[in-house]
Amino acid sequence: MLSRIQTEPGVSRAELARRFGFSEMAATRIARDLLGAEIIEEFEFPEENSSNQRRLGRPRKGLRINPKGVVAAGITVSAYFSEVSICDANGQTIARREVSNSSFEDATETARLYSYALRDLIRDTGINTSRIIGVGVALSAKTSPDCSEIIRSEYFGWDNDGGQFWNEVRRNTGLPVVIENIANALALSEMRFGAAQGVSEFALAHVATFAGVGVVSKGRIVRGATGDAGRIGHFRSHRRPLRCTCGRDDCLNLSATGFGLLAKLGKLDHDKFKRSKLPVYAMSLLDLIDNEANSEHLNEAGGLLAEALDPLTKLLAPELIILSGTLGSNSIYFDGARERLTTEYGFGSDSGFRLVKGEVSPADAASLLALHTFCYSDRLDFERLNAHAWDHNKRTANA
Ligand SMILES: [Zn+2]
Image (cartoon, rainbow, N blue to C red; front, side, top):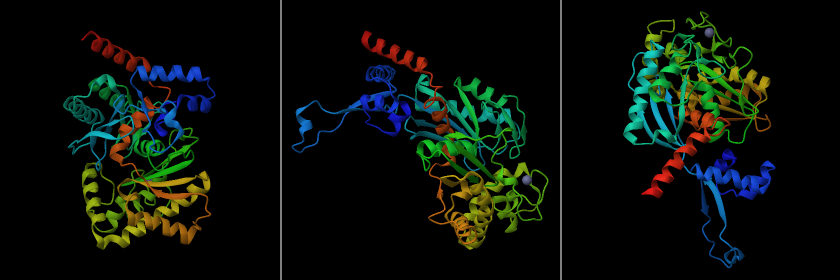
C-alpha cells in the first residue's frame, strides 16, 4: 500500500481497497495506522473553480507520503562518487557530503571512515535518528544474498569480509544496514524512482572503470545460484595487451570500459589493473570524457559494449536496457552502443526492448536502496516509527 501511495499521490482509501482486494474498512484501518505513525498524510485536492458538482459535496481527499516521515541514509563507496547522503521518503536528496578518501585498502577502515562521515552528516542536519529507516551501502562487490557480507570485490580487493563492513556501519550509526552491488543498487533505484518505474523485466549495465550488470526479473534482482549473475565485465571480447583482475587478456573489462579507454589512449603506465590506482583511473576517465578530441574513442568503446548487450538481450528478453555509470551515461558512449546495436544487431523500434540512459546518479543509489529495502517492503519497522510518533504526540499534548 505504501508503494502505491508513493507512486500515486492522492490515491483514496477506496481505490486502495479495490486495488488490493481489501474491504474498505481494512484499507481505512491500515491508512489510519500509517497516518498515526506519520508515514503518510492526508490532503485535500485544491477546489476546482468551475461549476463543478464536487463543490457541493465534501472536498475530495487523498493520501500521499509524508516526505519527512521516513528518511533514508546512503553510503556510496566509489572512486567517482565517494559520498554519504540522506534522502526523503520520495527519494529526494536532503543532504549530501563528499567523503575524501584516497585508499580503499582495508574494508573495515573504509567502513569506519564512511560511517563516521554519515554520523556527522546526520548530526549536522539535525534529523531525528528515529525517523531514519536505515543505511544503504552501494559499492562494487558481490554481497551475500541477505546483503550483510561482502563475498568478493575484484575492484577493491576485499574478499569474504565476514560481515565486518556491515558491522562497522551498524555499530557507528545504530541503524539497519543493507550492502548491495552498485549495479544492483542502481537497478532497484531506477525501478522505484527512475527510468524503470513500472517495468519488471530489465537490465542495467553500470560502466565506469569496469562493467557489471544488474538484472531485474519480476521486480527482483537476479543473483543466480552462485550470486555471480551479471558479471559481463568478464564476457570474452577482443584480446588486448592488458590483464583483467581475473588474469585474462580478452575480457570486456579491458575494451568497453574506462580501464580499456585509458590504456588505449596511452594514459596508463602499466598493463595490469592496480587497486592503488583507483582514484587515478577515476580522475583520468573524467578528464578523458570531457575532452572532445576523444569522441571517436568513446563512441567506439560504446560499440564494444553493444557486442555484450546483444547476447544479454537475447538471453533475457528484457523490456528495457539502462546504461548507467560515468561511462555508461555519457552521451557519446551511449550513442556508440545504440548505433552499433542498430547497424549490426538489428536494434530498432520493433526490437521489443528500449535502450535508455539511467536517471539515477550512482551517488543517490545508496540511500534509494535503503528506502527500497526498509521502507517500501515488508521489512518496514512500523513499530519503531509508530512508537516515536506516539511519544511525540504525547509530548505535544502534555506541553
Ligand atoms: Zn576478466
